[in-house]
Length: 156
Image (tube, helix red, strand yellow):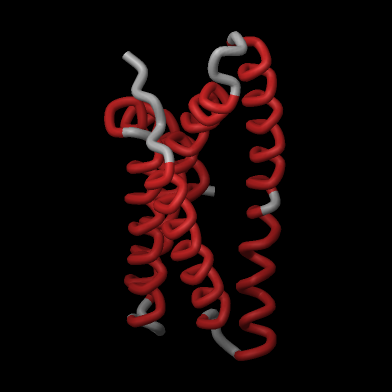
């Protein structure tokens, strides 16, 4: 329970960092930290200390990125509805946040299931870690691509 607690406690830090440095930049940095954590866990297979350190870094980075990504929703919808007034953008951002929260909650099922399936089929967690590594790398690519196409507006 300590890992999710750490992640939840760090969400406000992610929002604060996103307000100062941009949500996409903070999210990309967190995804990179997640890649490093999983790579550490893969390279140091069999080391409990490396696994514990990697999983700890994953919880820290995921908590911070959660705050940063959720800070992006109002910006994206404000850009989509520029000139129309704020009500429509606010409603759509709130709905999108709800959907994203529901999808994020699925991680509580998917991540342990991936570990269990990997152990049952291969005898180790390596297959699940490779899957997570590919996912985090794809997050970096997607976030960087969309960020490069249209930088978010800076709010004072």
